[in-house]
Length: 267
Image 1 (cartoon, rainbow, N blue to C red):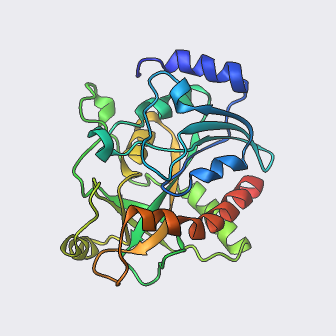
Image 2: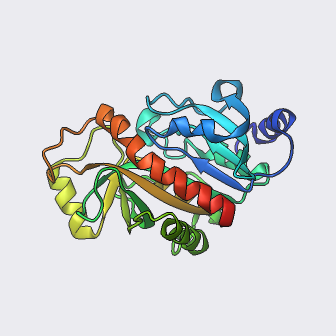
Image 3: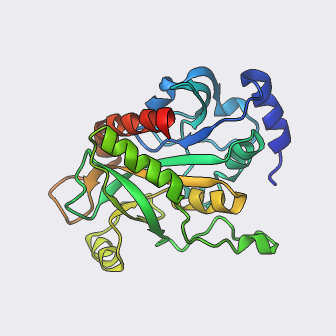
């Protein structure tokens, strides 16, 4: 267990109460504004000793705890990426705190580039598996056999089924696919995109995979949704940039919010 987990848990409970969250969320680039959905307490990461400094624009580095659609939720308004400090386990402390608060289910989001014509900018994709193309792993350095985490069905089938039902009810297309993790911060080359298409990837991004590995290590149930912000390098004439990612994310964010609200009401 990381340092400060117990102290942070007590601090958060003193501000937001000790009722366990029924669902946790990690918001991706351009989706940080969704913390405003929550009716409750918002705590800046800077007030939580040891919490990572989420410095990438398009994120909202605060913890929101409260009610959404009548359910108790905890939302991480921003994440720290591997490329910021070279730490694949940068989100370990926040996830350990989530577990200590009584959380057991987590939904992760990201902004991603699409490798398939079935997913266009503005769409959302349900992740059913991933490829760790970066070669990095947040469990490197763990010194006991708990580090040997099985990753079959890493993306929880029950949560995925509930999200599929939500998509049908909300009349939202929700294709499923494999997400490939590149370390970033530079975007992928067209050659790299061709390579991971051959390997079976449907979307590509710079996050999510280390958090999913950490969730499985901690015994948390996890699912993930990509908000498609662009076609991957070489697949369109788009000028790919972080500014473009932030500009396009709200298109898919509205669909994700509809899925989330339905899931909370009926999942």
